[in-house]
Image 1 (cartoon, rainbow, N blue to C red):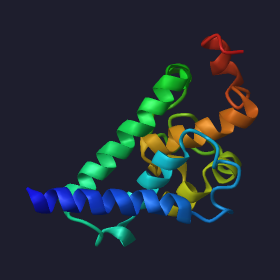
Image 2 (cartoon, rainbow, N blue to C red):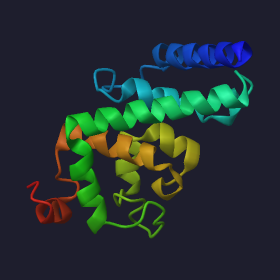
Image 3 (cartoon, rainbow, N blue to C red):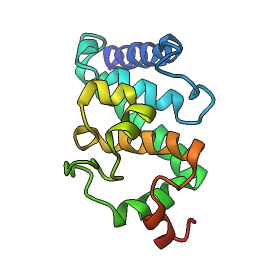
Image 4 (cartoon, rainbow, N blue to C red):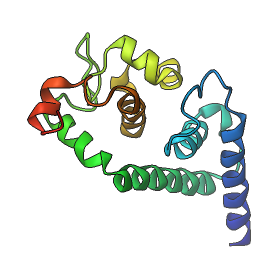
Length: 159
């Protein structure tokens, strides 16, 4: 039991430390947003190159905790419900139909502008986890509002 607790603490500390180690280029403009810490921790924790840190169980707990923090922040901001409404009129989370990809139908330029770390790691948005698609959409929403999804945002009463 003590070994599991120590493993969880080590992985949590490493994940939180990596937040400050993210390069300024990859985090440009996002350091002040509410999703920066949990999204960066999830990106780091799910990277196979970092699999040697902590135990399998401690990593699983840390990933679960970071996902809960991320979803809590999105729900608390009131943004998640609106984004899920938009998603309901868009494609599935794994929709790979060119030129729009993923559950919020993001084109390549949108993905590169708002989720370059995810794009470099997994390719197009149809291969991203749902949390990564939501983080990317949230970052775009902070700058552009609901205008990247004009028709579906109107259906949801957001425009």
